[in-house]
Amino acid sequence: MNHAEFSHALQIDDDIKTIKRKAKEILDAGAKSIVVTLGSQGALLVTADQALFAASPQVNLSSTVGCGDTFTAAYTLSLLEQYDPEKSLAFSIACASASAENDIPGHLDIERAKELNLKITVNVT
Image (cartoon, rainbow, N blue to C red):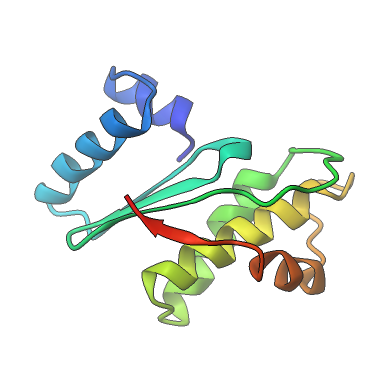
C-alpha cells in the first residue's frame, strides 16, 4: 500500500515514524509483514523482527503509472521465492523504479531492474 493510502485509511499522520508505529500495531494483530511504498523516496518494510527502509535509486522518470502494481508483483514474487526481507525490499523497489523509466504502464525491463537493484541499500530503521 502506498503511504498516502495507508495514512488516510488509518487516519494517521503521513510520516515514517507514525507509519512504522501503526504497522507494528497491525503486526500485533496477526499480519506477518507490512510494506508501505513512499513513492520516489523508497519503501518501508516492517516485520515482527525489524523495520527496514530503502531509498529509491535515481532514475530517468518517464511515467509512474503502474509502478505500485509492479512493486506489488515483485514483492509477491519475492515472497514466493522466499527471499529474505532485505532482498525482497530492494528487488521490489528496483522493479518499480525500472518501470518508472518506461512510458508503457506495467512494462518492466528486468535487466534494468537488476542494474538498479545493485544501487539500493536497505537500512534498519
